[in-house]
Image (cartoon, rainbow, N blue to C red; front, side, top):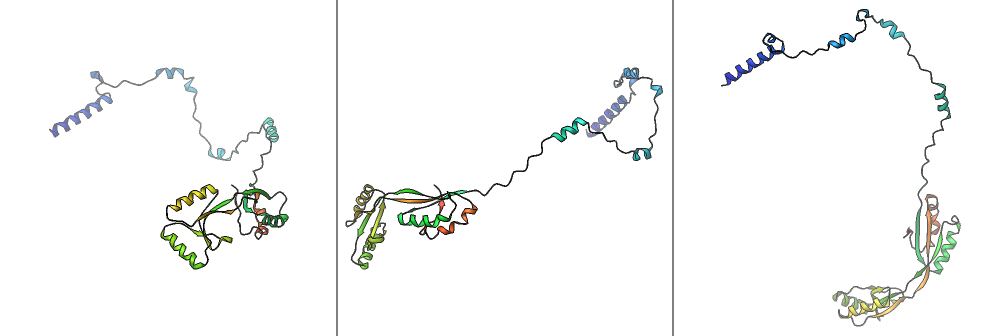
Length: 240
């Protein structure tokens, strides 16, 4: 079977070759001729055409021709506006910084310290300071009694910390922005067995001051060390 396929393939190739070469034209089998006789009729005096030889020495020595610039284009080039200068590097970015709140005495110290800074670079803004309420336990007679109360609160899993200031020796069981919130917490602590705590006002409502520097750049930042002592441990932060 394979031998018959090979023989058939050879006969097909031989037949195609004979057809493509026009060997079968007498039998009426030949490819169609591609010719355009009309192009011969369009030639103009073909007998006058001459083939010339190029001299390499002349072509290499010939200088390239330069086309003169028309006067109108030259004038337009001279009248064109100068290119805009490249943008200068942006100035150092400024940021707003603030610190506070300061009481009246601290604010006065800040005014004195900031007097040497550029005019308009700083301002002390009045800032209301809300009152604060505490769930307070104490005042205890001595440190030993205070330690026993701490152990009792830890056993009841009640959070607490030092009351601080004039409220020592005592414990704070929470600080709140309103008396109502503190009383709610006192009621909640009663369910945990806390009986001797009470609500007191830790700080009355007052007014203070916030130091604000609206545009601090590198030059101004280098001068801010003069405020360090007057800021009473407070630090500058990004404006809210």
